Image (cartoon, rainbow, N blue to C red):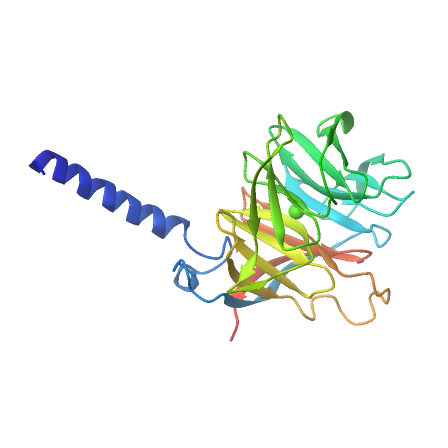
Amino acid sequence: MSPVLKARALLVLALALVSLQCNGGAGANLPANTANTAANAAPAHYGYEVVNIWPHDSGAFTQGLIFFDGKLYESTGQEGRSSLRLVEPQTGKVLKKVDVPEPFFAEGITLLNGKIYQLTWQHGIGFIYDPQKMEQIGRFDYTGEGWGLTSDGRSLIISDGSNRLKFIDPDSFRVTKTIAVLDGNRPVNELNELEYVNGEIYANIWHDQRIVTIDAQTGRVTGWIDLTGLLPPGDVDDPEAVLNGIAYDQTAKRLFVTGKLWPRLFEIQIKPKS
Ligand SMILES: [Ca+2]
């Protein structure tokens, strides 16, 4: 190898190492020294600290949550009660609401290329909205159930209640890739609401007090965030009022979580488990 080529090769290697340092790890709010960087490392275990508590509509059966342009957008489910909402975070006030008619049961939402996409549970039909006008501007079709939805900035990423995440092209709505979410060799099933955070996908698991963090390239579980005790006992007694709803404020690096029918929405910071 010529000296010039050798120097270039060393530069490429150095850049690759820097890139690995920057991209590795279980997400946004973690101290750098707890980052789970090794490709086959065991998942890291995290707890949480509450930063802010804000009101949340206890009639909202939360199925999708995103933060964009200083506001929360929320999708609520159940037939006849489904909606897309624009919500003021600090007050929980619903500023605008678009009702989703029966028989649709709305599910996850995400923002991609300036549009909000919303899934429905069992109808294979999704809705597209203009987030500024809060108006429906289109529909799309997909195969299988729709549970959670997020985006890596290129694809729509759909969960369907299994351990699989489907990547869908937003122009053709064809599946371009599917990843299986595995903790070691164990499938993590019933993946629900999703949030893409810096190369990882944070996912609620139906009826589980933990959020799982997933390598968005491979499906490998990188961490578990245990949110047990987040909602004070007695706040809700409905067995379906489970933790569901994760939104990430990319600008201020804030993480928000709530649940179905929860009267509160939390900004949390993830902490290594002691
Ligand atoms: Ca989300």
